[in-house]
Image (cartoon, rainbow, N blue to C red; front, side):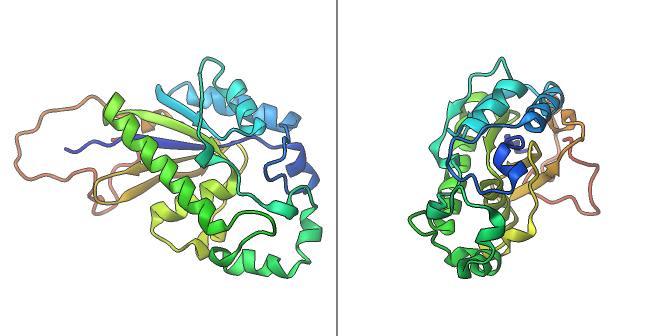
Length: 237
């Protein structure tokens, strides 16, 4: 059977901007008390998973989340995971931004959006997907196909990565929900990605760890690129 590594996408915990209804963007916004509690709680869940690598956005809210969740880890900064560059929208209240003409485009046609003095959403999606796919190949090569690794990033970034994994257009990514301190799991097989978990805020993560390999003599058997006909037995493999 072809084995593949597992990517865990962790969104940072709640920030002061989240609580106040603002758009933080790339500003140095920190976790609030709830966000710190969320980070500590997700760390308890992650104890069940031996992580081969931990990478993160450079922004402080992601680094704070990992300091609380995985205090023994040594995260590597990956700039491809940084928040979308919202330009002049950064730091403004969402209720004010909702009155801007661009707001409806963000909601209905995000692939066409270029934020004033900022980044295109399509550009954000492309560099984020490229970053996690490159890291996934690297982790698999260095640690083997049973490895699990983690990337800490931001809501829109994770939504864009999930949309790519699902094979849906970026214009549909607003249908995806990624809560603070949630875990999303993806496996990039040779044929297709599999979305194993989405927006998980309380489940047992131990099932994402691969069991020991078993030798099989059958010449023809399903691989990890094959979808389980009938639904399969669940996330553990």
